[in-house]
Length: 279
Image 1 (cartoon, rainbow, N blue to C red):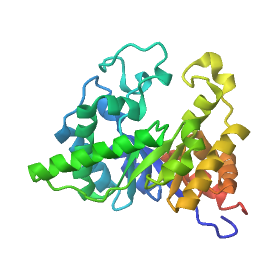
Image 2: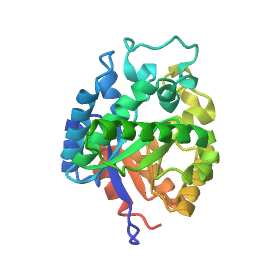
Image 3: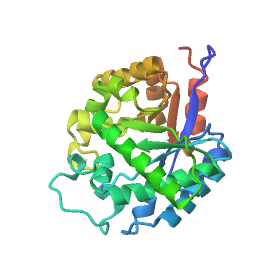
Image 4: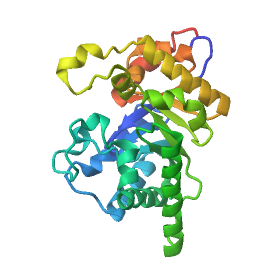
């Protein structure tokens, strides 16, 4: 910023091409790489296919950190062909890490692929829609089992990959202090945080007016996460519309956010704006 505060700008990505574009745009890394790209065909890619994808993304980042979010199996992200039970309200149902914990073979296949790919670059694993510390602990148990399985097979993998929590629900924000004792880092997802705070489905046009981009309620929740991360001395990165709109990015920077992840096409505009700001 104008007064010398260092703010890291990273990119949202979903493919190897996205990562290359982010590097060319000057991103400090990949703040959020969504893995649902692998599920859009309506089938689950095997461990080898997943490993190849993750390793290629990490290599394309050329040593920059890459945060890969584990599968968030939601209807708007996986297509209609993906096998899942019918739910009356999927946005409030078995999504994010909940789905993964309910399907351990599915989850641990992805974790094995990620851990193996971790040798190709600077990997961070992010767990989506975390609501409680217990959920996070159960997910860490799954990571441990994945490591044990790889050791038994003699497969090389990255032993010390950081695992973080995606703060996307009010429950996670309000108990961020507990989560920070176990999470290696936080990402804050403003899009979902707004949706769950206002009980308004962000893919439903009838309630779009109830999803304010600038929200005192969401600012307060983000502050809880920022303060918990600072106290635990873990990194925090903010994603979503709050990162992509320059004035909102400034407002969150004033709350203490020092890293943002946004689409590569928005990087230069946000960078230019923040370089003119005095915090």
